Each structure stands twice: as C-alpha cells, then as structure tokens.
Image 1 (tube, rainbow, N blue to C red):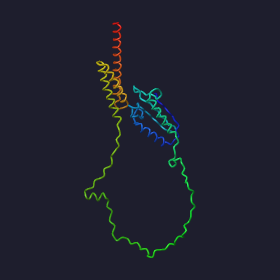
Image 2 (cartoon, rainbow, N blue to C red):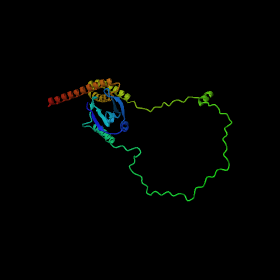
Image 3 (cartoon, rainbow, N blue to C red):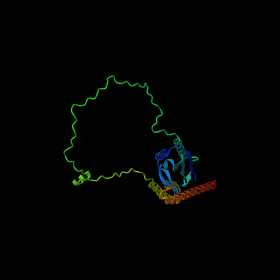
Image 4 (cartoon, rainbow, N blue to C red):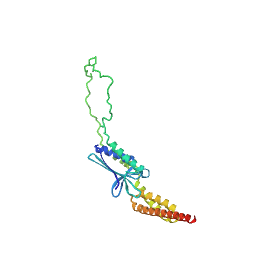
Amino acid sequence: MARYIQDAGINQPLDVVSEAMEQYLYRNRYIRTEWKDELVYMSADGDVKGSRYLIWSYMSGILHIEAWMKGSFGNETGLIGAGSKKRAYKESIDNLIEALRQPVKDEYTRSETVYRSSQPAQAYTPPLQPAQPYTPPLQPAQPYMPSVQQAQPYASPVAQQNTTGNYKPTQPNTFEPHVSDYGEEKEQKAGRGLAFGIAAIFTSFMIPIIGLIFGIMGLRFCNDGMGSSMENKARIGKVLCIVAIVWCVMRALYFVLVFMIGLFVMY
C-alpha cells in the first residue's frame, strides 16, 4: 500500500473541519465509492486530474488524511515522485491542511477594525419648555357592548371544498435535484474496455498496429471501469488488452529482426 498519509494537528471545532472538508470534496467533484471493500472518496475528474482517492477522519484535534492515485494496473500509487498530477494532488492536500490551521474569527467579531466616532459625545440637555400636564377627555369612554349576531360554527376549508366537488388535494413536492450517476458511466467504460480487448486480440494477428491501438485504448477504459459492478468484465478486458499489446510488440520486434538480417545478408 503506497498512500500519502498525514496526521495534522488542527485543533479546530468539528463543525468547522467538517464544513471545510465538504467544501473541498464538492469543489473537486468527489463521490462516494468502494475501493477494495473500503468506502472512500473518488474524484470524478479522473480523465483530467488522474484517478484520485481519499479518506479522512477527525478526532481529538488531529486530522487524519490518506490519499493515493490509481496506477495503470489498478494498484495504489503514492503522491511522492515524478508526475505533475501527483504533485498537484499533494499540493492541494497540503494547502487544505494549512488553511484549516488558520485561526477562525468569531461570528460577531469578524471585522478587525474598531469603530470610533470623530465627534465627542454631547451632554444631555433637557428641553426648555416644561412638560404639559395631562388633560382627560371631556366625553366619558363608552362601555363595551358585545355583538348581537350569533357566532357561526367553524367549517374547515377542506369540508367546504368537498361539498362543491371541486376540491383537489395538494400534491407533495417530489422534485429532486439531478445527481450524475458516475457508477453507470464506469460500467459503460468497463464494457467498452472488454469490447476493445476482444477486438485487439483479433486484429493483432492480422494488422498488429491496429491491434496495438485497440489494446492501449481498451486498457485505459478497463482501468476507468475498475471499482464498478462490472469489474470482472474490466479485468478480463485488461488481460486481453495486455496479451494483445505484448503479442503486437513481439511481432514488431520479429519483423525488425528479419529486416535487419536481410540487410546484413544483402551487404
């Protein structure tokens, strides 16, 4: 297992760390998936940034992060070494840890400036005119007389509408935001990888260069399809693609050797 592991002392409240991690996962389009019977986060931008994987936990002020990338043969690859995608992934995690270590300002004292009035406070000056005494009204207040009308019994709006026959119950709002199904996309890539592997095997015996191209394309689709429900098909397609690539390379080396022997015989 080659993972980039960090146990960083954050000493921040749990809600602050959880919100920051959710924002990081949302901005980088991470989704929940399984990696070798382990629930992890996987980046959906695998074609651009590489197949990134991450797990994290926070306890007693310590943020535990494990990050890695998927290799060409479906294995775990660490973030230490050559490769721009590895360096970019490692820098993003280090920047996240440094941002979490910054002190959090109080919600009611977010501004660091202190307001000061440019003019001194004026002393209170009472009004010059004395207050007027209270004068009661000339007419006496009228006594309260209850209404003569009899109160009507309460009728619910549902019952009133049912009597007319025009009532229609309100339908609950069942709208749900659209969520991209990345699992279905990985299944499609696994099926394409198997198809390219079969095509690579057949074309490697007739036209090796086409078989080599099909093998490389199928190997890439099979790697992207790993971790889905069609993982077995992706593995079969990967084996077929590797066999086709090796066979095409061997045939190419054979033709080069025959060509070199022919030139040596001629001269």
